[in-house]
Image: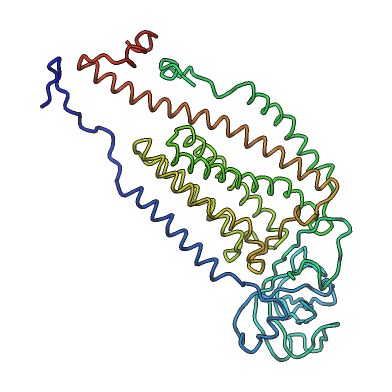
Length: 177
Length: 265
């Protein structure tokens, strides 16, 4: 026991603050480290999520029945003559293009509001070969080569142009170079 | 800035407001209704997105100032490690808190914008969305780490390290739309590509100005609150030491000063 000048006990008192686990800061730093590793992994594995239509056509054999995301621009808007109800499902038939390569699409469900000619879309689905659900249908200006993309989800990849006189070209607008 | 122990103790200290913050507050009081008018009334609809384009005037500015806020946190963290100054630590902390709020607003407004535009609220494989979420979570972690009880210097040092690491993600978030353009639905910058014009461009600038003032206003107030908190904490340590020394009959210069000013008995 340490006695000071006045003869009182100067021994440090016990810490009466509620104890806090010492490993908590280490846990937070570990979480930060894991986040960084996870981020690097995510960026490395997601560097090419969308396959452009020309690339998807070139890799058709390798892709087989694999599900993937297809990027391209519709060459026309979805009119009533392109929509069919078969059984309980609604199908929309249209063609997308990228870099001069066309892909015919049979999409299950209603297209989103912004679906329009020249507005790039990302379609989720897989390649199919053979007759389409609407057997007598011919895609106007489409590929019509027996291959078609069976899509069940349409996402719109809107471009960054907000000018009034923006170019409205179906093949070039908003597409990555 | 020296504050009186009694004022802090009795909760009478009210110094986060000043002439400059009142001026900034006045600018915000005028600016926010003006921005609302331009965003919802004067600026035109977009040809394809229609009214959804109006979110651009809040989403982009809050995203920009979340980068700014986390950037200031990084600068404050580096300067703290270099100078060991409480001022820089308080600056880093204040900016991180505002950055987290702005970042959350970025994610929320982006999601609301995404539903009518992209046809989805959220995409887990989207590089821009996920890196932004990681940035947000990193700084939530930074704030959580600051709540772990520790000596102020140790706490500040730990936070500074996380603050610097978290900031590494900012250029990745910002450039992701160019570096991984086929892995995100997010558009590239409209401003740098010259794709905004007339009232759309003006309203965007106005939104950026107003959000910039809001950041500055919040930052000054939050810094002052943080400074008061650290002063109070330091005063608490000082008072405890004084008490122990008084028990031991030791007179110190600090104690004398406080006694002369009548702040402690």
